[in-house]
Length: 475
Ligand SMILES: Cc1cc2nc3c(=O)[nH]c(=O)nc-3n(C[C@H](O)[C@H](O)[C@H](O)COP(=O)(O)OP(=O)(O)OC[C@H]3O[C@@H](n4cnc5c(N)ncnc54)[C@H](O)[C@@H]3O)c2cc1C
Image (tube, rainbow, N blue to C red):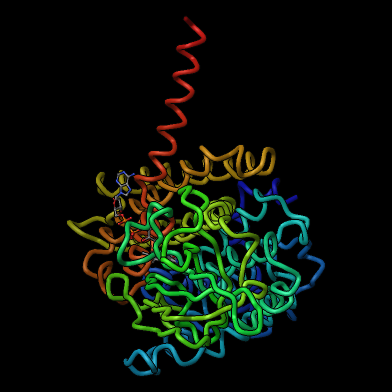
């Protein structure tokens, strides 16, 4: 059913917004729809909508999680951005203030999404979804930046939950996975380090010194400095997954094989020896209250029984598996965001007049719109193709396509956002629309999931292997 609707996802979205507006307040339905659309280009939020939207609509109309996702994103998460932003503005400017509280509206959105069953959707089996189907939902969620949080489908928790789900012990699942699934805590993934080129995960240098405690427990003493730890500043963050190298008493790796020397440990965020050094900013955005932290781990002690994920030496393998299907989510959300920016560009170019005609009548703007649509549809098509391949042959079999979408999609989406900014003129680079923040988010995607170059290297290597095989078969 979801499949059949995929090509019309946006049309459905628009119709539903219109329809629900009419049900809620028939007299002003059309104009208010237009207003809310216009506000997507001219401000991040829009007018505040009814909190009880779903009580006005026959629930039988909504027969799939996809429709619910469309509704909650369009009707609740988009309008809630205004309240979210205004709460954050009222929090003051210091780091302590910015990362001290979560806006109530997010908690409300979470209860709403949960009551509709839109909760932990990335756990595909539990929801009987294919990755392709979840990809479509991610696209919708990407249009409203609160939606992934509202549905407990936001990074880095999704990846961390998957790690605990697949590799955690029963005890780790009970202690950390259960509260993460309930969103009573959040988590961070601590791999990247300021002192080493972390795009090559085998460089990660944080040390896990192994020792036996006085009461006979195998323990690790953790020493290292991490940064870009997304979510670590969130006041709800309860746990880190930390990547490091197990070393002996001389500080030498216990296993010298590059891909087997790293391990992952679960570390409570309030452990003795954990220091939040600072919140990093991306083009001056601090992403509060979630944030990206620089964290020092100085003689943090954990027991192997409680902390070790899977087995010693499996850190690289876990890091790789964490970056598989999860990328589809990122890419589809990126496409959703690019779609929102594309729509804002078209809306603006219809209404803005320069040199005696609307911008959209100028050939160079038409080119932006035409190229933007082609980029959007191409990005969408290759991502869904990749999702299909993962559904059919698993993440390992779809490795090349996964690597390909990781650089292709953010680049295409970035071009769209850049053009949308251009069409908005000065407004586009200001803080008065969501475009500048969207650009900063999209730009980081070319690095945050591993730089473009690393994914291109993977694709080029795989293609070269194929070529060698081809040539050999001709000999
Ligand atoms: C917003 C944001 C959120 C993030 N969240 C997290 C998180 O939650 N947890 C976490 O652990 N990390 C996170 N990261 C970090 C991210 O994963 C790393 O920044 C990324 O892997 C690159 O590592 P690096 O910064 O050390 O760059 P380096 O490894 O120093 O690479 C620098 C540059 O070298 C070039 N390069 C690298 N390899 C090659 C190659 N093979 N060929 C040619 N050129 C190459 C590329 O241009 C690359 O950008 C986040 C980053 C950002 C920006």
